[in-house]
Length: 171
Image 1 (tube, rainbow, N blue to C red):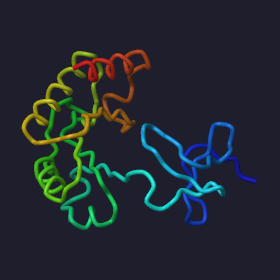
Image 2 (spheres, rainbow, N blue to C red):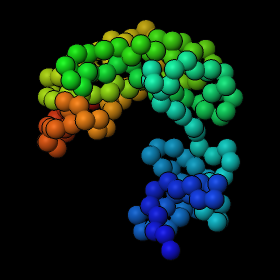
Image 3 (cartoon, one colour):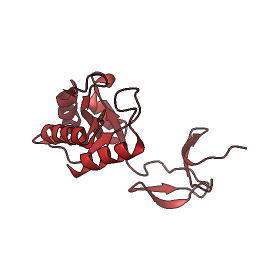
Image 4 (cartoon, helix red, strand yellow):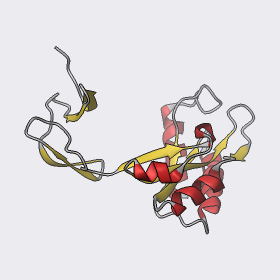
């Protein structure tokens, strides 16, 4: 017997399990999005909204195909801090991705891949993201991405990581 928590896809159906390992049913709001689940726990088709995150690693994107697949929003990487040198870099596909997603009718938000090691660097990253967002018609928030990548930001302690996230969001 398996014990599940969070989102799970089982035999082609999607479920959401609580921390008590029980699937949810009926209307549920999960991370701010409303979903509808059947009495058997299966996510109902057309329930909720579907979004993607993209960066240069996704290459050239057919945004009409993305929209036609049911995606309604895209969170696009606007930039990153180099994991070795710490240089701030605009994602080379940023402008094309924003133009393409908006032209296809998708809502757009941005994210910045952080390698900040201090609150000062986090402010620099957030300032760059806000500058890039200015005038490009994004309708969703700017997010900070702090996932591990083995770079310069990977070795900071949890207190510093918290300070980085707070400084980014405050900016």
